[in-house]
Figure 1: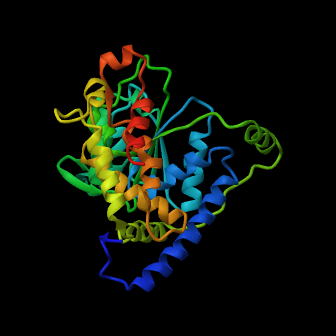
Figure 2 (figure 1 turned 180 degrees about the vertical axis):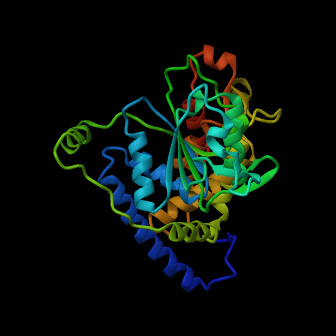
Figure 3 (figure 1 turned 120 degrees about the vertical axis):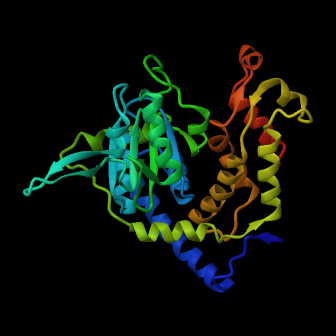
Length: 336
């Protein structure tokens, strides 16, 4: 099988050994998170996939589904410095990135000193991100994309690694500012957070209403996470997987030569960032499972979280009751 992106830094045997060791460590990470977060294994796996891919994730779910607890647990298990911002309409950019203050020294000299905002962390929880104004969202957008902020013409680099796990309530839209397409595209994955199943909710009841609060244990350090992120970019990808990624993303665009179903139901489709997200995501998914290379099944599994926020339906499609899930299912069925 032909592969792309073979590493020139390590021998094949060394790559295999490193993948197996990292896969075993990531299995411990998933177990440690699962000991605290009940009934959300797919959500955990997708969030971990986004972080291993070096990107950000948007968690969409109703209140009370442990989204905040999930981010806190990720920070503890992965050894990351974590901060949380509760987004509100009156939140200003300076409340996120920081600001300069004028200080006077003992000798009477005055100077400005930059006080860093909460964005200077390794894992940022942006709670209810769509409640902030577009001006504030744009400040976060620069941090997400560029990994630095600019205040008074001065550049300040963010810590490494830097990831944003943002949350959004899918129901309450009054008083919110929908995220622009440019910012949505910066999220590697959109992760839908469902209700837990019966047994998981039963287990949660006893774990959270007793006298002992289960605490997560640290499994990785920030340095080890960065090493895993670099390893992912060295994992070989078969030509069949590359073809599946390109076919899926390109088939979701309503171009003149696209099939009639796509032209009638999709208003606008995914950009090349979707292809990049899929390429990194399938590698991360393979690494988490301890596999040496991704498969087409990984592409199908990640199609919805990668494409869901990068596409829009036409008015006619919405009127006919067609959903994005229907469209994505139709597109993935062609990958068989």
